Image 1 (cartoon, rainbow, N blue to C red):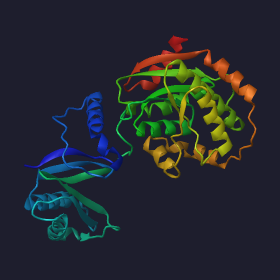
Image 2 (image 1 turned 180 degrees about the horizontal axis):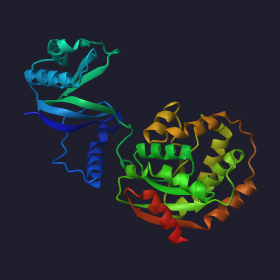
Image 3 (image 1 turned 180 degrees about the vertical axis):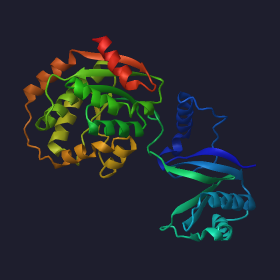
Length: 356
């Protein structure tokens, strides 16, 4: 009997952390109050995908029939389709299924004037994966977010969110499998609201029903010219606060594709001086940074990141000013705990006001 299931295809980097992945999926379903009967591990799939699929028995005829049925329901008039089958058959190979299903689907949809495409050129793909006991014929496929399972590193990292780039750095740190704690830095109330709106895109990915957040008001004005100063100040605040709350690692939103090497090295040394380990989660991420922006619903902020890439930085850091601003700002860090829901933004702002 065909059964609709959600199929998660782990990345290559998650294959030795499957138990963590199962735990994360269970937490997501429970947090969102989505009923599910069971989570079953079935096969080792090295593809970054998530899909709604028909689960059928591992039988050549059952798989071909299901592919044809699903394909006939998905295809529109005149579309080119491509049947792709991966995995391991019992008395057949996936290519046999591809050929038989393609032929049958041509016949089934002849009145729609559909035709087969190629692996590099098609309008719709009908994808199936075969395991030892079952096969999964995908009705819908979406690209996964990548990374490794939540908290699989068994290490806490303090992130700071203060602009668009720092939100992406926080997400990348989560994808690295760290248990992320968040400090928000802002200069004024208007900036706070914008940052909280971006923060709200990250909160569901923490896989917690209640989240503790920390807030620090910077004793400085934010301008384009002060980017290096602000970033250096936040580095000192992050390292100092991490030491205060006994976290050994911090994530810095400093990319070598945007900032000069001398500035990255300066920040790294400031962190090491505090006895803290710096992580540069944006190292190695290039144009895919814009995919991440869209992934978390911040597409309208792309231009701000693009503008960062255009700045020519001068080797000029007022170290006395960095120390003074960070020391003053560190005096008044506020912590709140919110229960995640549909009113996160209002709850955060209201909690901060009542905390003052």
